[in-house]
Length: 612
Image (cartoon, rainbow, N blue to C red; front, top):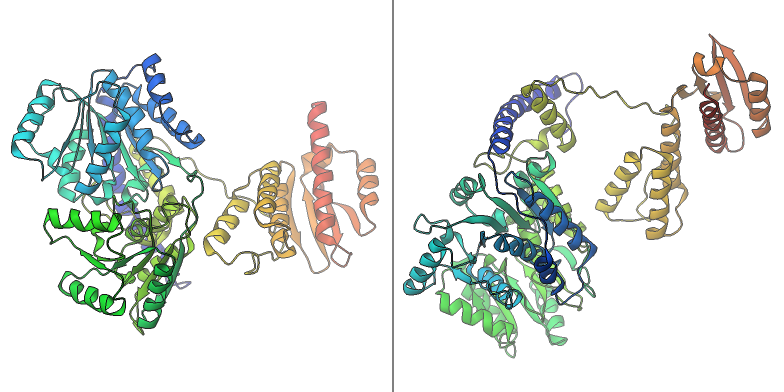
């Protein structure tokens, strides 16, 4: 939020956040110390068996998968416990990366736990692991609340005597009744779906073993711990072949629109998810839809149904016996229905950003274009945060947006107490960049190091006035990313690469956007050694070079070179410095400035080459 100038509000906000940051930094330093003291198991380098297992993957791995696998294995080979976060959207290949690392663990005689938030997801992973490890001789078991007691007793015995290599399951695996002979590797799928109590138990396990967390949209606290280096991070950004972005719309709920949307999906022989998150009225909603579409069987699924009933409904929907499934958030993870490509979410403003992203991921799983409609009640005044969430989910439709969604969630909600139970926090009060800067400075102070003082970046004090117009791209996320990318360019080469990439993506760059690049080029020029500044006066743009530079330059040659550029460029000496004036009335003064900056830099390079 903006503060009123002169009110002192901004200073108070910074001081308040600074107190919290100091406290977090102290606990982080303790955590760093503990982690470095705790001697973990250093896994050996890959051998022929590992290579054989990796190459048995029936598909071609993406470059991201290969890079992430290499990064995680390198962490596993260190003699301290690993805590790694792997970010990647649904279907981007997180499980394959996890399985390659799991094989590395069991080959070294260690046991592996694969923790899942729901039974449906645990079952899905269990079947995947069974198929992938079929010829390895590894014993894989699954534990959930539905595992029969006799089978559970057998699995407990196998885990204790070491005959079970990999166990997949829900939070039941965190029970004190389950003991391991030699646990070495923990994989956590969608960590944000576990409760605080379970997370504390996971934290206890993390102290001595290697941990890999998989997530499409990590919660703010998890993401922040990766950003400041408490945990390492890898990303999968390459989408599966033939997948399309999900078309996402935010609108007021109108029965005629709902009817039309469902009719359109049924007309192409597809299926529809209708998410209504109130169990008490869900059957009435289903009955209303059944009356509207008598020829399309309607199913109902919610968490208060028995396990057998839920599984039967899901199975029937997957097999096409139901055309419309009215459900609660029970469908959030683990479902892969090929033919369901329209999603309607009622009261979408009640859901979190990551949750909306996960739910939307239930559609568009194959090569057919999918649609998601986020409905809010007509004329309802929604909160500012809810409006930001809906706007973000609409903006980030491109494949692989999970990490961007998590970053946006971090700025909307804040990171909270990353070492305690609270998940939302105070980043939004000062902004993410300043918060991370304050935190790194506080950590340096606690460790007895002097924080490195950042010199303020010099910039060209002239107003060119570039911006990104709506006609170039109406996606706010793309605009913000482009502004940041231009601003983050630290060398002319980086800026040229950015310009080339933008041309590839959007075609010819319009004048307004080109002015942004020109402004940054001049900023980079001003940062060069020898340049005092670039400012504008009513009559001219003035470039000032410092006394040392001016003293070592051949004045006559410089005068000739500058004169060759234009008659509208003048030189003068002032207090031992060279001032170069570009007349603002000249035909293209900014273009002249850019040419002049190149000329002056070439001159600097020549002097450097001669050792002057």
